[in-house]
Length: 275
Image 1 (spheres, one colour):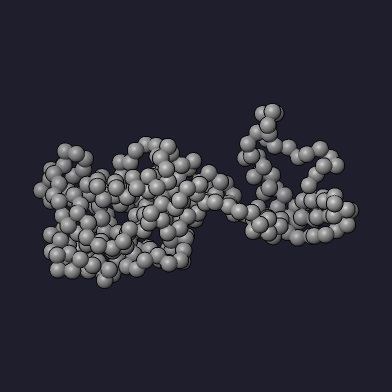
Image 2 (cartoon, one colour):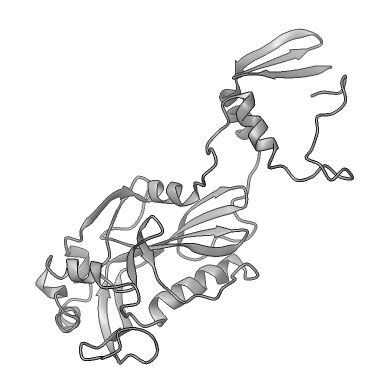
């Protein structure tokens, strides 16, 4: 059977042996093709705690959920003259946390500045689940991200397995000290919502009385879902989503790797062999 596919503007026409067999939009055609292609979001086992994965080309965004409970953390002391870095004074505290959601964006396996931290009072079930602001230090609005997490992670995680990438992020969240490297905006704002988190001392005392009390704290809502945040972190300046026209497809083709042996972008097969 000789099959010819023609694309013009926003329409796709397929002909089999010279006869029309299909006419539809570019978007519908590509959606149908995608539905028949197996696709692995990650080449390895899904990392522990990962709830959702979104991938577009060489960009990957993971939503990782930490269970609620008590964590032993290091927190900058109130009397520390230096408020950040290794020269600051810190104290150890056992504090209750609700569900903590980390959303991290990777490019070619390397973590970029797109790392965010949120709270939830229930486990993630769907990408439509909402997120809440956290009350910890080290989090602020930056780089267009509402809850950017400031951590001194290794510069390049690209050589690590996906399990180790996520493990490194989780270890740094709980192992690094909470200080004022990212300011105190969310810590100060959340101190007013519940007296049990007004100070580190009150937080620690409330934890001793009820290790899961933070699940009942009315954390400030972000007003966005986990799916929306992941999509924002995945998006780039270029047009995103399913191409809807021949012009959009041409833009995608311009990003294709060189055609073997030519050093140029892949070209259409010779006339008479088009498929």
